[in-house]
Length: 72
Image (cartoon, rainbow, N blue to C red; front, side, top):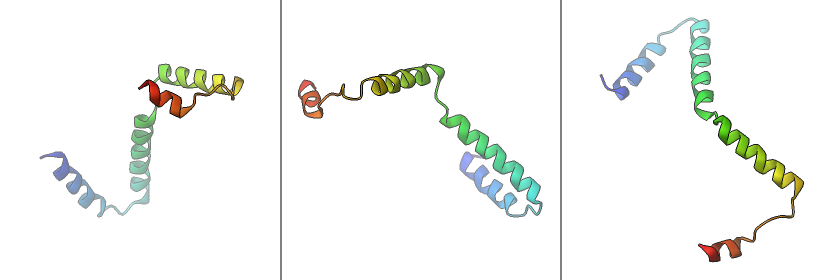
């Protein structure tokens, strides 16, 4: 059974669930999966923090977009 068929079958099964606790458990699983996909690596977080600090320390140290485009 391919993934699309499995999803459809799962939705059909889900429609028959009567217990709210089961729905809540499934919602928690889906929420954890979504959050896991959105996490950034420690290296990316470190780089982002570095750039944010650099901007906070020097908010006027900016590049003009027109000048940047000329270099490309």
